[in-house]
Every structure is written in structure tokens, then in C-alpha cells.
Image (cartoon, rainbow, N blue to C red):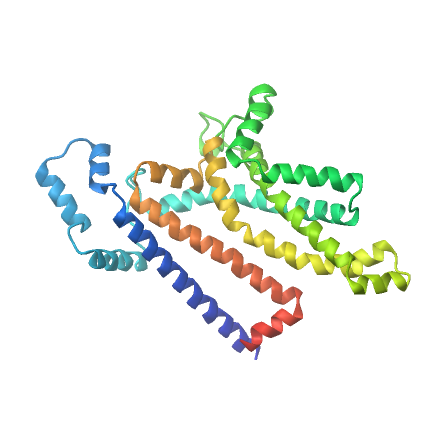
Length: 330
């Protein structure tokens, strides 16, 4: 029975991810085809002048003279065989560039994600349990302020304050300048990671905190909490038995749904701090018309966000038996 459930879940998510990636590839290919940017011209500008004959050979090699449907079929066939093309900017296979850049982006997003989730949940509980008191009012205003601050502006502010004025952190990059990667210590990497991760987490934890606050207020105003008070339960017991259990799932939902937001914010944060990750790579690919790299990162980011949502759905079943039973009945 358990094996059957696992098999059903596997095939259901496999079908969803295949459908998603196919839709993203169609949309991405269509947008690139409709773009006024000429990839051959961009390639010529990067390598120097070429003869008309060489330009014609490039167009024939890339299949630009073929019908759009045939070009998409060739592109899809290459992707299914693991060939995402060669980056015009880095002169390397796209999959190698993504693999290298994602290591830095994953470390950045993981630190920001954990920090925003834990701190946001704690602050949300503090605000909800102390509704309309001084702590609630102060923290609420801070969260509302952070929600309205653009990522790049906050990053520039932190960079100016802690790097330029105080000199506590490096101005940018993921390692010291002039040091070989093999000689970089873990503490040096963390030192370069703190400010970009802090920028992302400050923008994310405010949403989690405000959402958790409102959900906790709704729980504390419910009838079963009123009945618990009538039975003589203390505020600590109410929070432990009723509050945390009922707000953990909404907070978990918002936290995993923030994968897309974190990935989008990393584009700005990595450019502000010159952090060599996927965010800076996709920005460079867009500005330099590196179509293979742009499409590769688009597919990878869609897969990354889908994975986050899938993990959230699987965790729901472990936390809430009712959701687990509904999944089993699908």
C-alpha cells in the first residue's frame, strides 16, 4: 500500500514537472524568436568581424533559416539529450555555467531563506501575542517599512553603511580579490556572504512576520481558544496547544512560496554586491543577448521553484493528517 502511494505521488509530480518545463520552454522560445535581437550579430560583435559567407554558415549552423517549429523541435531534442548549448558570454557549455553559478546562489538563498523563516515566524508570534501593545506597533511599522523598500536600494544602503563607512564587510564578490579559489577559507566565504544574504532576508522575513501575526490573531480570536480560556488554560498553554499548531502551516506555505521571490531578489542583490551567482549570470545574459544561457537559466529557475513547492506539499502531508489523506485519495 505504501509503495503504491509513493509510486502515485512520483508519477503525479513527474507529469507536472514535465508539463511545466515544456510550457516554459515554449514560452521562452517564443519570446526569444519574437525578440528584435539578432543572435548572430551579437556573436559577431563578441568575436570581431566575419565575412558574409561565414555569417551565412553561422545562420545555417544555428538553424535560423529553418521554420520556427522545426527550430523548436531541434532545440527540444538537444535539451532532452542534455545539450543546452554553449554560452556566448562565457564560451562554455550552459549546463557547466549553471552548475558553477548555482553553488554560490544556493548558499546565498539558503542563508536568506532560513534566516527569514525563523526570524519572521518568531517576530510574527511576538506581534500576534502582544497585539496593539508597544512591541507589536514598533515591529509592525518596521516590517511594513521593509516591505516597501526595493531590494537594490536596501543593498546599496547596507553596502554604504557596513562596507564603505564602517569597513566591517567586503564591498563585493564571493571571495577576496587576488586569492585562488583553493586558498579561500570557509570564513572568508561567509564574510562575503553575510551582506547579500542579509539584504535578501530582510525583505523576506517582513512578509512572513506580518502573515504569521495576522494568522495568530485569527486563531486567538476563535471560539475554541475562547473555550480554552474558559477552562482556565494559561496564555502559554493556549499558544502551545492551539496557536503554534494552527499557524505553522500558513507560515510554511508562505516560506516555500518565497522561492520565486528569493530567486528574483537574488538577481538584484547579486548585481549590487557583484556576487557571482545565477542572478548576476542571468542579468549578464540578458544584457549581452546570450540566448542559450538565458533559456537554460529560465528552465532551471522554473524547476527550482517547482521543487520548493513540491517539498512544501510533501511536508503538508507529514504535518496535517487530513491533507495526507486527501493526497492518498487523489
